[in-house]
Length: 184
Image (cartoon, helix red, strand yellow):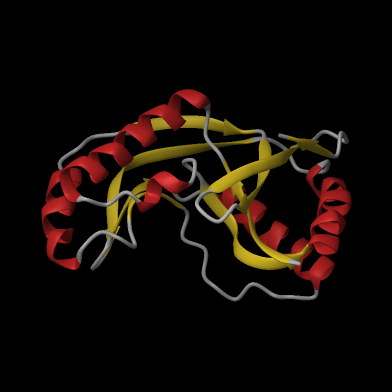
């Protein structure tokens, strides 16, 4: 049976809380709650349908690539938008982040025989999908005035799966560690 999975970088618990607070503002002020269905994250491999055997294959083999990756820093700097419905936190351009994402795409493409074609635009979503187009300008005007700056070290890649109502973290691989996949 196929389920939907994606690979992502998750920030520290403190930044998770701060980003979630922005998502609650989007829900309470602009009636956009869809972003609350997943933890704050930067998508590395977008959602895809995988058979359970493929998931096991990824869990077993991605660790060899991850073990050769070094931790790196990410800076979140303010808000931006994709008109007409997405408000997000901007991730500063970073060679290490781009190299990590491209390497992960190559490795997963090799493992699964499926190439990811979408461009990489790292961000953390605050409001999308259910943000009414007529409320977008109001939401964007609100968030564009906010100042937010945070930096964290990326030390893991997370596997998330869709449970029907929300995205759950299945586990992670630690960068630079030969530990393999860690459940939960």
